[in-house]
Length: 215
Image (tube, rainbow, N blue to C red):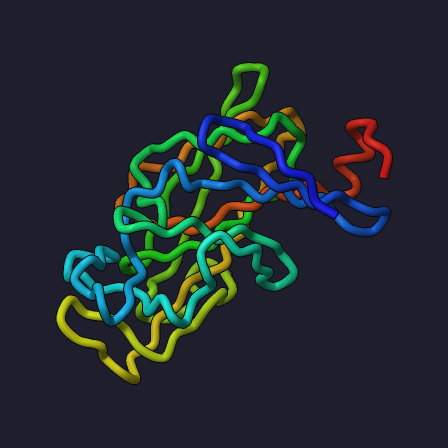
């Protein structure tokens, strides 16, 4: 069973409660921040903006909009794709999250070539922690930062044609949150090569018990 709450205007959060041996998952909706198109169908190839050449992922090989999916045991909510966006191109956006003690940030993300920068976690006491995030090239398909492939497609879209046999990769990236304070927001880096499709926060069993939360 999941619960649904709102952490900011236009943002829906789904919580999947923990058990004695399973962490709590907090699926963060980012539909209010979508600002880039990186997936297309054969009918709208020209809308792709994953990189400077207008390439894009084939939407037919990715999840349907607004569905809850699972990648390597981590649940995510896929964005509500529209003409103007299906991902967040990182430009310093602030993602408000339900105040809580979190252990890990999981991203479904892609990058034009490989990219690395600082993501900031903000806490209710006014402090912010710099957390390094790295995402590998969507075209090369080699994990440079220890990520796992989330989706691999069999082709790539160009503005005017579909290139069969040219695979692309979207990555599952994990970022640790060592401070066990109450987090209230995440701030993306200003790194336009980085594209974020989904965000889930995980609270491990040990963190919940330290915070006085019964399993």
